[in-house]
Length: 532
Image 1 (cartoon, rainbow, N blue to C red):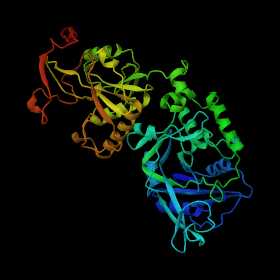
Image 2 (image 1 turned 180 degrees about the horizontal axis):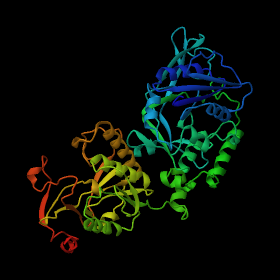
Image 3 (image 1 turned 135 degrees about the horizontal axis):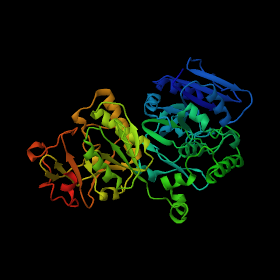
Image 4 (image 1 turned 180 degrees about the vertical axis):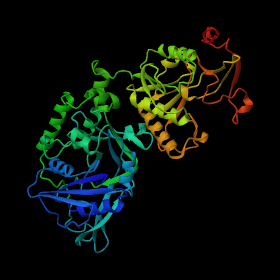
């Protein structure tokens, strides 16, 4: 059973063999190719290969239907639909299989394929296009010379659709795409990959829409509205040959504008009117998430569809070794935020929505707890909260400005419970991390995978993005914010990590250093009584 089936619907495709050979040459995973010959055998016979299957339809059934027939004979966990005039980076399938998640639709970065030139005997060249009559410079006949190479630019990663649900490139949104795995509102349609069972569950190639048209929008919108994500993987690429010049260099199917418009009408009726029964989000949710320029009147001017403020939630984690008096005190202050709480604990606590993880206390366990909570939480913005920190209400008033930035509360006092000694210096603690949930999930998945592979080391650090000792595949900016009043980090006998109480303990000296006591921390006038 292969891991991936590449489904290629084909009709009158002169570069089909080039595409097949390219996939076989660059594949590094257990990948098969299923070629769906829709109503016509190729001019050049397809070479036999154990990883190539061929389906022939004597009469054309259409691109969507042919793709579906290919998908039905696949036994692979994942499917990729691909146009018959594409090339790939080495190991494209291995990279995609490493990165894809169950509810993702994923596609490589897209480049343009320079498949051939027209060349005359005198060496004059003409870029790929319809068959020329004669050389424009010397009048000699011209022949096709296959080049089959990806052009260095553009490198497309961002797509959207307009008010008619027509595909558009979206260069401006690229500025917001950080890291190697980036979200895109829509797809180009020539290539996409997802789980096979999800492909059928979402009816990805709806044959009632016709043979062809609006497929990128169909795939992307169904992927998003069903609760999944659409991701461009910049760690690999594919190159697509665009045929827009007509003649013998146009679309291989007989296709009318009326038929394409019918597909768009089907998509508009299904999505704009929220008729799709698989949706867990309304269509306006997708518009509000990406805020494309064509839809400004929807997310700016219409009160009933104006995007709401991002939701906030808390992911709380504990090793259950803190004494109950302190634990309850800290939880009560977290409750004052009035935010939804997802708690991940080693023993049942009944605090918020409680998930119990059966494991021994360790750094590895702590990061797994955080990841578990992030995946379970439903809110847009997440505050990470630890069991031995007193969180001031002003902490939860902060709202991140940028979705791809990790924010740390830099206003903390550390209190030593045994004698009440307190210090305040420049910090960016994990317990004060606030960010949008999706980038947090991306990072902690990568962090847990690294720990699983080679164990935890102090070189890795605890606070994501605050140092560059590790070159994370997905990199985000980080910033410090300071609310009106500080959080109080309580040092007790059960701390998982030790605190440094003198400046001498720091290799890199703090930028500022204040010493005090439990009696004089701003915003906490009753702290001695609370901790007595």
